[in-house]
Image (cartoon, rainbow, N blue to C red; front, top):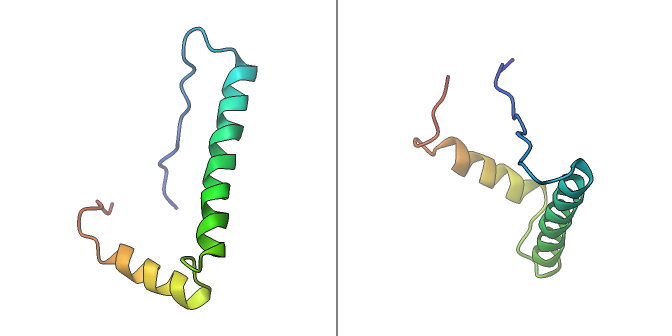
Length: 65
């Protein structure tokens, strides 16, 4: 199992409530975009996901540890 973690560093002047709201709006944007692609037929089912996974695994620019 990888020991890498995502660490959030609080920004000065941003209250925890504001940061939480910003993250929620960012995720809402991500899901809205995904829903739009899904509705337009750009997001496929399981077969499409397998193809994307293979495409990503062939990308040699991603370091593997």
